[in-house]
Image 1 (spheres, rainbow, N blue to C red):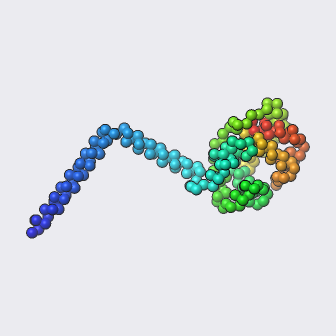
Image 2: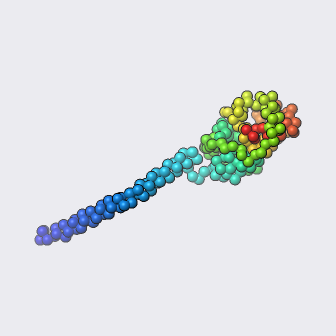
Image 3: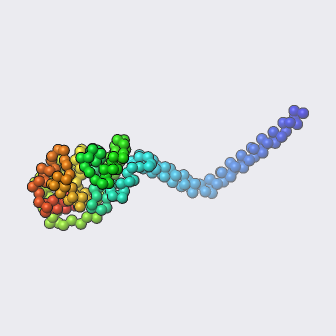
Length: 227
């Protein structure tokens, strides 16, 4: 009786081994005929995984608060319109300081104020870190007037803008990068500092722009935007 009972199990094992052998043979045959294609797909999959990993490392996990900034500040902070500031490559400390200014009421904007107020401290930190890591692209959509650029450069030197903003106006620490910023944005902010509509706790910017004429402000904006 015991011998008869074990026979079906033996047959089952043989079928399983035979099936496994056929699958192994089929896999081997597929590797021979489709080896290069399979290898290519494997490499592509690894590349996609790496791109996704790098993207998450730089931009943070989804959903991202930075996606809400695209409509004004452009992809990765490189705004195309001259009206909006270009955030890509700005010093992290400066970006964080400005976001906090919108939260505290030191700065006011119908779009930025409610957005900053709706975010946690961690989200504000993440947003500042994100844009500071983005590569700055040239302000290619701006067409400068050479005569104004020359006058603006002289004004920048006379007012020692490099002392705070860096030798190339690239920005440092809590001071923004002015080089390659949006022309209209620069002009507007300089005018706001002059009128007192935009405050500066250090008092540096109101002191610098106090003696500037409208033409001076326009020339400075031309020079900085063209850098």
